[in-house]
Amino acid sequence: MANTKWTSRDIIDKDILELIGGENMPAEQKEELYKKMMDTIQTRVMARVDGLLADEEAADVRVLLESDDREGFEQFMVEKNIDIKQLYSEEALFYKLELTQLANGQEA
Image 1 (cartoon, rainbow, N blue to C red):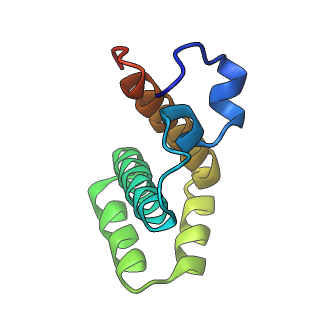
Image 2: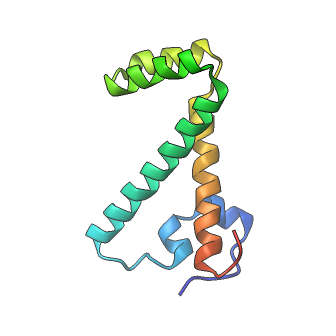
Image 3: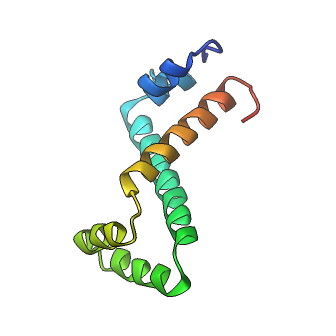
């Protein structure tokens, strides 16, 4: 069962599975859960990026992503002054906090 007395430092430092009481899950389940979490975080980041760009720029980003042009995407983010690493960090932390609250029966 999840612990309801996590500190802010715990939320930042501990693995999400420990925070939600899933550290004893089978490896295959852990891997699938991590994949789902990463997909959710990536979707949230892309939604934020989309909100920062004009429609034409957002279309350009989609083309870069669909063609798996990582370098082009990163360069585009630099040109638009979007710190993609910061967005990922923020969204990962927000999501981690939400999951921890849900696992502990707290309102997210």
